[in-house]
Image (cartoon, rainbow, N blue to C red; front, top):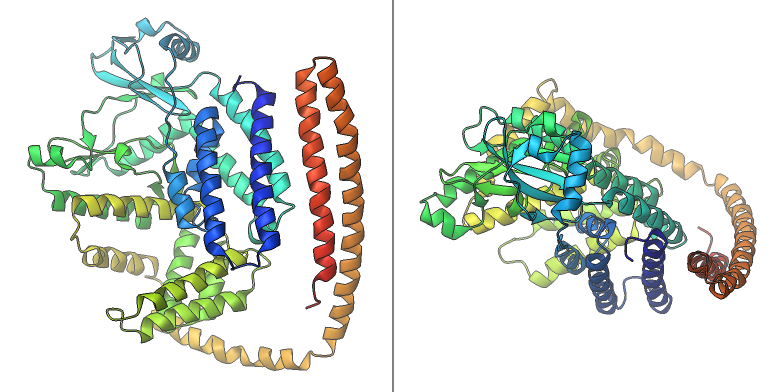
Length: 542
């Protein structure tokens, strides 16, 4: 039943509608920033319920949970922890179903290409499964990764449901602080790439070339002639998770050296490669008996552009010169700030955090004071329209995952000393055609040049009355538009209810499900618009 399109859409939409309604009721009773413990408890309950339903329905919901688990800009850490635990715990398919997909894509029987294919998958996830086999042409053992049956249709159905969810979310306050359409596009782009194994093949070949002369990192070979959109064949790798400490001790592998090699090569990807492995969890990072590190699964890849890296470098230089306006401008260049962000509030929060760091004795500072500063910054991120672009969310995910592995391998590793030469080289290479002293002088000069603008602002007072009148007119027009939308939504909801009853009476359960879903969403939307009209009417003019 969970493969039926209408059933999946109904369950997903109603599930999210319930979550939205729960959060809405809380926000109506509590002012922003108050009763945070209760709000966090509600969010944890929602995350746990989502995790349970995602594991039951599978498909997009598991991948969506994994995607959202890296969005520290959207959820508190406890919720992220719940979503991080959402792993691909799905039952495996039968070989007969996978065989059909493989033979359709290869255009020949499996036995013409491989022998000894495993009767069951050796690994099974929400999108694909992996079988072991022996390649007839050379006798080498290979891994065959094949998409689960009907997974593409299931994912497309779930995306249709998510479009309805996004439409609901756009009627909430989340729309002010989050670019929901951009978030949806990022989700489609990331998960869509995982549905196309040719993209994973391309990424794998990219990293294969990057590490072809590296003595400590290995990327498996790919058999391109047997790779399609739904099937991927690669060299079989004998190894174990890099965090298997018993294996490391048994083969006398130096854990400190292993940690250094992993850190330096991850740093090379993040700073110099352009592309980086965005999901380097221990299952995708193996170690062999000789201590060589093997990287697997390039379905999720992050990328940074030269412009982004220059912007990051500019932000670092602005921190050195304490040019907070330039820092905020750099964040805007990196697409962290949405158009309606209050730059002044963001500037003040950054300045507060930096001054706290510079003026405090970090060894003896009161931990409660640290928590207060971090809480203020977190509140700013929640309230201001600040959004983490997908590429930087992946950047953070990759970095935090690698750091977690390093803490297991070598708890006393000095990351600062290891990073210094690499960061210095990155700064030198990125800025070799720039005079850093002129940049610093320009940073201070920009402050002096801002003075005339401040004078102009003081002289522009007479224009404020005109702006007030424009805002008043805009509010009235907005409320009239909302009233029309509220009336339309109410009409659609009222009409859909008898249609749903007719579907039940005629045993047309698909019609009943669709009509009932439309009625619930439309009536909920009408109520939401009514609340919005009242809130707009009560808002003071700025």
